[in-house]
Image (cartoon, rainbow, N blue to C red; front, side, top):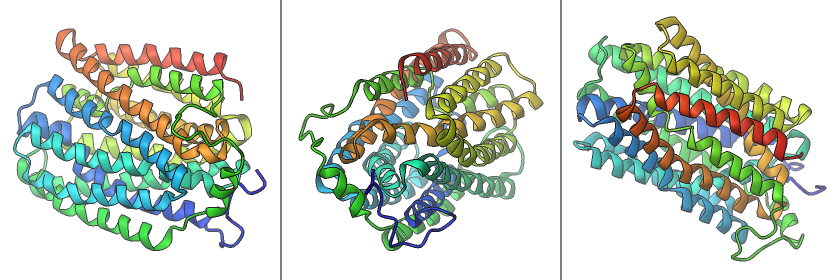
Length: 408
């Protein structure tokens, strides 16, 4: 690990490599944009376009899964070319280009197309970006680095949702359902920070060549064999992540559940603000905690909290309980968002980080389509509580799996 990072020639910002800070800033701007444009898509589909729950589940699951193979491919290419930044820039650029087309959406197929384009961009950028973060920090600060990145990413979501709440209030005031004019204003304003994200990435993020090059000499490069060079622990981790994700359907259903409980639109947005605030506040301490106590314990605790939250949504909570559930949903995200990414870097050789992150995000993406279809089917055929019971059980099993089957 002596050349694991390329930090020596760059002044630290907030106690870490500047790459981590500026990649966090890129994610902050991107999340401002995405939260404004895409968070309320399930309500736009249901309220404006009249889509059924299973259709909404398909749009959410397909858009999340469609980029899975691209995530794997882009990570592998970044290992081969040792060009993380270029692929990340391409991915952020693609997402920025397609977002304005949501203004023109008049059917669920158009929404699906735009979401697909956005996710293609995410698929291209995610693995190289995470590899950039891992390449830019030492092993002793890995959890902290990913925690800081997740914190900044989530602060962007908070800002995006606050801006969305202000726009909703100014355009339509109260009410349970979203209107077409309101949604179009969200798109118009939301495109601006997406452009800023691309500019920051282009100008301020550097390629930590020393970390990538050092790994390329360790004899672990596997050519076109995606799984060669990875040990059993990493493969087991992917299986357990897949199991968890099968019960972790698109967040569309959490939002739909809130509306199903007759929570007003503005309150749903404010609940998402609370969710993201807790996510942001927990991310950095959880990342630091994973550096000290181990990733498995932090991840397993996060999944246990998720299981309890999903059980809470299943039990038809009152309004104040729904607020609490959204807050603890953010705690789950904060506990696991940085720790799982840091755990990937712990388990794989330096030279194969891009491919490893591609496989990690690919497994999540591939599992999300069946997860969301199952959730939509359970919602329609049984009742709106069924997807949450299902998710709670799988999360509990995944927490047991990571603690008993994988050693650090």
